Amino acid sequence: MALLLQWQAKTNLISPATLPQLWTRHVADSLQLLRLAPDAKSWLDIGSGGGFPGMVLACALADIPGGSVQLVERNAKKAAFLREALRVSGGAGQVILADIGDSVDRIVPRIDCVTARAVAPLHQLIGFAEPLISRGAKALFLKGQDVEAELTEATRYWKLNPRLHPSLTGGQGWIVELDAVERQHQSAPTPNGASA
Ligand SMILES: C[S@@+](CC[C@H](N)C(=O)[O-])C[C@H]1O[C@@H](n2cnc3c(N)ncnc32)[C@H](O)[C@@H]1O
Image 1 (cartoon, rainbow, N blue to C red):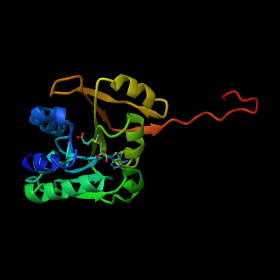
Image 2 (image 1 turned 180 degrees about the vertical axis):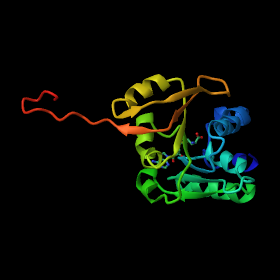
Image 3 (image 1 turned 135 degrees about the vertical axis):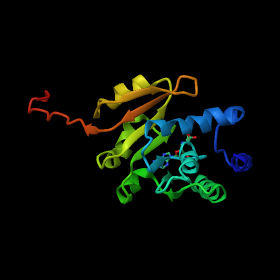
Image 4 (image 1 turned 120 degrees about the vertical axis):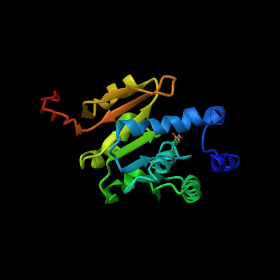
């Protein structure tokens, strides 16, 4: 957290308005995911930014044999922060400087749990994570009060059976848990333009 505050002075890693609630809004918000996937060892966080939830999970997993978090971040400055944060904290993980859309197919180790917070709308996140979910990963996406609208939009593209968990850290937050997803097949248009 000291390193985050130091870098925050030069790089916008988290919203300045949330600085007074660093430990609840960011650290506890991240840690609450562990209880939803207690056996997961291999994690991947999409768009880790200032390290939430990925960097916090990397610290929590540091003493667990085989525990590790892949932190995928496309912004070079934020990726540099994450590398330094892993170094000073001894967190278990690696930083991947890449756009998840271009790199997810190159993730070789089996991922037990894929996470994201404040990165993209749900239907897009599912698109990014689908290759990992289809290989057995659980998805845990931290979402805000618009979760119902995001789920409705996502079901236009995906067949889902989501579990919704209220955030333990207050506010209007939710965690969307997904164990399987399937792309919706658009029915082929008939020659007169109507859907079959
Ligand atoms: C609003 S910040 C949120 C950071 C962090 N997850 C949090 O909740 O504090 C979104 C981050 O996701 C990264 N990002 C957005 N789209 C991405 C993508 N397709 N691949 C990798 N990183 C992405 C951005 O560079 C940015 O650092």
